[in-house]
Image (cartoon, rainbow, N blue to C red; front, side, top):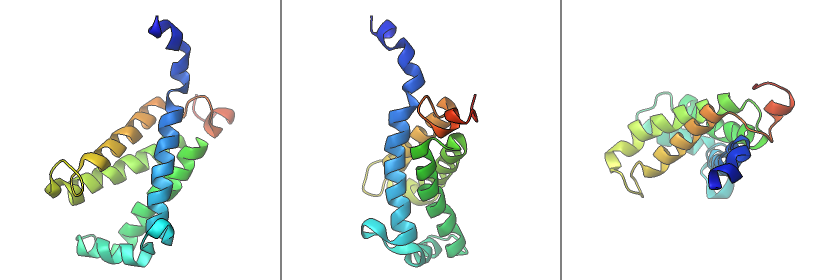
Length: 142
Protein backbone atom coordinates (compact mmCIF):
# COMPACT_ATOMS: atom_id res chain seq x y z
CA UNK A 1 0.00 0.00 0.00
CA UNK A 2 2.80 2.45 0.86
CA UNK A 3 4.56 1.71 -2.42
CA UNK A 4 1.41 2.60 -4.34
CA UNK A 5 0.82 5.74 -2.27
CA UNK A 6 4.35 7.04 -2.82
CA UNK A 7 4.93 5.79 -6.37
CA UNK A 8 4.49 9.24 -7.89
CA UNK A 9 6.37 10.88 -5.03
CA UNK A 10 9.74 9.66 -6.25
CA UNK A 11 9.93 12.63 -8.61
CA UNK A 12 9.87 14.79 -5.48
CA UNK A 13 12.45 12.74 -3.55
CA UNK A 14 15.33 15.09 -4.33
CA UNK A 15 13.59 18.19 -2.97
CA UNK A 16 13.93 17.67 0.81
CA UNK A 17 17.46 16.37 0.31
CA UNK A 18 18.40 19.36 -1.85
CA UNK A 19 16.92 21.85 0.62
CA UNK A 20 18.61 20.30 3.65
CA UNK A 21 21.99 20.22 1.90
CA UNK A 22 21.47 23.78 0.69
CA UNK A 23 20.88 25.04 4.22
CA UNK A 24 23.96 23.28 5.59
CA UNK A 25 26.30 24.31 2.80
CA UNK A 26 25.15 27.91 2.44
CA UNK A 27 25.75 28.31 6.18
CA UNK A 28 29.13 26.53 6.25
CA UNK A 29 30.33 28.20 3.07
CA UNK A 30 29.15 31.57 4.42
CA UNK A 31 31.23 31.00 7.54
CA UNK A 32 34.33 30.25 5.50
CA UNK A 33 33.89 32.94 2.85
CA UNK A 34 32.32 35.87 4.68
CA UNK A 35 32.60 35.17 8.40
CA UNK A 36 28.82 34.74 8.71
CA UNK A 37 27.20 32.81 11.56
CA UNK A 38 30.28 33.15 13.78
CA UNK A 39 32.65 31.94 11.07
CA UNK A 40 36.24 33.02 10.58
CA UNK A 41 36.13 34.42 7.06
CA UNK A 42 38.28 33.52 4.09
CA UNK A 43 41.70 34.67 5.30
CA UNK A 44 41.55 32.79 8.60
CA UNK A 45 40.11 29.77 6.79
CA UNK A 46 43.06 29.97 4.38
CA UNK A 47 45.51 30.05 7.29
CA UNK A 48 43.85 26.94 8.72
CA UNK A 49 44.05 25.21 5.33
CA UNK A 50 47.78 25.99 5.22
CA UNK A 51 48.21 24.40 8.67
CA UNK A 52 46.46 21.27 7.37
CA UNK A 53 48.90 21.05 4.46
CA UNK A 54 46.84 22.60 1.67
CA UNK A 55 49.15 24.93 -0.25
CA UNK A 56 48.43 27.62 -1.26
CA UNK A 57 45.88 27.90 1.53
CA UNK A 58 43.97 30.80 0.01
CA UNK A 59 43.34 28.92 -3.23
CA UNK A 60 42.16 25.73 -1.53
CA UNK A 61 40.08 27.62 1.03
CA UNK A 62 38.38 29.64 -1.71
CA UNK A 63 37.66 26.50 -3.73
CA UNK A 64 36.22 24.61 -0.76
CA UNK A 65 34.23 27.58 0.56
CA UNK A 66 33.02 28.45 -2.93
CA UNK A 67 31.89 24.89 -3.57
CA UNK A 68 30.02 24.92 -0.27
CA UNK A 69 28.39 28.36 -0.50
CA UNK A 70 27.65 28.59 -4.22
CA UNK A 71 26.98 24.85 -4.50
CA UNK A 72 24.49 25.21 -1.66
CA UNK A 73 22.84 28.17 -3.40
CA UNK A 74 22.55 26.16 -6.61
CA UNK A 75 21.01 23.25 -4.72
CA UNK A 76 18.51 25.61 -3.10
CA UNK A 77 17.34 26.75 -6.52
CA UNK A 78 17.78 23.43 -8.26
CA UNK A 79 20.05 25.19 -10.78
CA UNK A 80 23.04 23.32 -12.23
CA UNK A 81 22.07 20.79 -9.60
CA UNK A 82 24.22 17.86 -10.64
CA UNK A 83 27.33 20.05 -10.98
CA UNK A 84 26.72 21.59 -7.56
CA UNK A 85 26.19 18.16 -6.01
CA UNK A 86 29.39 16.89 -7.63
CA UNK A 87 31.40 19.86 -6.32
CA UNK A 88 30.03 19.29 -2.81
CA UNK A 89 30.62 15.51 -2.96
CA UNK A 90 34.24 16.06 -4.03
CA UNK A 91 34.75 18.66 -1.30
CA UNK A 92 33.36 16.30 1.34
CA UNK A 93 35.50 13.43 0.04
CA UNK A 94 38.61 15.55 0.50
CA UNK A 95 37.39 16.59 3.96
CA UNK A 96 36.84 12.96 4.97
CA UNK A 97 40.20 11.73 3.69
CA UNK A 98 42.49 14.65 4.52
CA UNK A 99 40.90 16.15 7.64
CA UNK A 100 38.51 13.81 9.47
CA UNK A 101 39.88 10.31 8.82
CA UNK A 102 42.41 10.53 11.66
CA UNK A 103 39.63 11.53 14.08
CA UNK A 104 37.88 8.18 13.80
CA UNK A 105 34.22 7.79 12.98
CA UNK A 106 32.37 9.81 15.62
CA UNK A 107 32.11 13.55 16.13
CA UNK A 108 33.50 15.99 17.10
CA UNK A 109 36.56 15.24 14.93
CA UNK A 110 35.40 12.06 13.19
CA UNK A 111 34.22 11.52 9.68
CA UNK A 112 30.53 10.70 10.23
CA UNK A 113 29.19 14.20 9.44
CA UNK A 114 31.18 14.98 6.25
CA UNK A 115 30.69 11.38 5.10
CA UNK A 116 26.91 11.71 5.49
CA UNK A 117 26.86 15.07 3.71
CA UNK A 118 29.00 13.72 0.88
CA UNK A 119 26.74 10.70 0.45
CA UNK A 120 23.66 12.93 0.44
CA UNK A 121 25.29 15.09 -2.26
CA UNK A 122 26.07 11.92 -4.22
CA UNK A 123 22.40 10.93 -3.94
CA UNK A 124 21.35 14.31 -5.39
CA UNK A 125 23.91 13.85 -8.16
CA UNK A 126 22.30 10.51 -9.03
CA UNK A 127 18.68 11.64 -8.54
CA UNK A 128 18.97 14.94 -10.35
CA UNK A 129 17.13 18.11 -9.41
CA UNK A 130 13.60 16.70 -9.19
CA UNK A 131 10.28 18.38 -9.89
CA UNK A 132 10.61 21.79 -8.28
CA UNK A 133 13.82 23.16 -9.79
CA UNK A 134 15.17 25.76 -12.17
CA UNK A 135 16.87 22.94 -14.09
CA UNK A 136 13.50 21.32 -14.75
CA UNK A 137 11.83 24.61 -15.66
CA UNK A 138 14.61 25.35 -18.18
CA UNK A 139 14.61 21.71 -19.37
CA UNK A 140 18.31 21.50 -18.50
CA UNK A 141 18.15 18.07 -16.86
CA UNK A 142 15.81 15.79 -18.77
